[in-house]
Structure formats: structure tokens, C-alpha cells
Image (cartoon, rainbow, N blue to C red; front, side, top):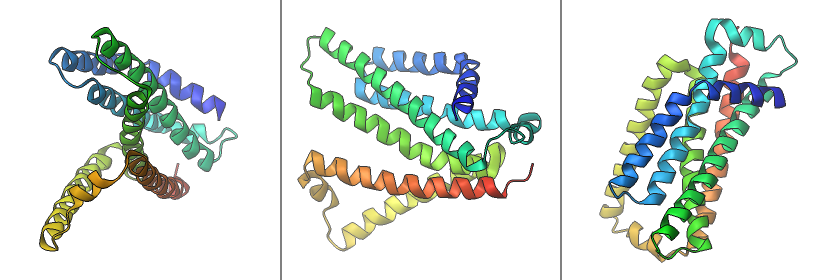
Length: 215
């Protein structure tokens, strides 16, 4: 797996322009007075998406066929993509939140370890949620069809959210009040369990998609 991680890191280094663009957008948001934590979450999510570009590079010019002539199993390939994604998301989130802490402290605003951990958890949660969707879609459908599938998934998520809101109104369920009544620790636990389950399902789908691929 070490070799695959090095390969993907080398691919990421060829996309410096994308990284600079994301950082430039973040800087522009900060100048316009956007919340620092939101900017960090955006940067973490965008940079973690670069893992899908490594899959596209692997597929170019029958690259997958050559890759699997090496002692690499398809299951290990999928595991490496998730591992690389988490390393990207984790490092970006940690460094981004450190930078946010420095900016806030420089402005003489109050800052605490709890705020840092909350920002770290929030940005990682968003990135992991995107990873659980993007990797199986990319492996199953490829770049072109994958965009259409992602558009459909986004529409389904919006539709489900709308239906849940309407159902709550019909049955007089105060979802917002229920969420506000939860403690921060409970919210983190619920979100963590949801992400863990989603991640497990995502990984199994990705492995199944790779097993069926023909090279």
C-alpha cells in the first residue's frame, strides 16, 4: 500500500494549480468576512476530492491493466483510495483549523480547545461524507457517467430532505427543537455512527465495483 500512497501523492503534486485555486478562493472568502471555520470546511472538502482525480489518472491509457500486473489486489487498491482520502482530509482539516486558530487569536477574539475540536470534527465529517459518495461512484461509473450519477444523487438528497421536512410539519414533529435539545457530545456520537455505517457501505460497494471491472 505504501507504493500506492506514494503514487497518488505524486499525482496530487502535478495538480498544484488546483490547490492554488482552492487556496485563492479561501483567501477571497476570508477577505469578504466569511466565517473562518466555514472556509476551512470548504478547503478540506475540495482538497479531499482530489482523490477522484487519482482514479481518473489510473484509468488513463489502460493504466489499471498495467497497475494490476503488480502484486496489488483490487481490495487493497480500494482500501488505499479510502486511506489516502482520509490522510488528505485529516491533514488539510488539522492544518486549516490551526491556521483558523492563529487568525482568530490574531484578531484578539476568544478561542478554546473545544472550538478547535468542533471545527476539526465538522470539516472532517463533511469531507468523509463526500468521500463515501464519490469513490464508489467514480469506481462504478467512471468520470463521465459519474457526473450524471452525482447530479442524480444530489437531487435525491434534496428531495429526501424536503420530504422529511414536510413529514415533520404534517405530524407536528419539531426536528429543529429536538436537535437543539441534544448535547454536543450526543450530536458528535450520532454523526460519527452515521458516518461509520455510511463508510462501511461505501467501501463494500467500491470493492464490489472493482471486482467486476474488466481491464
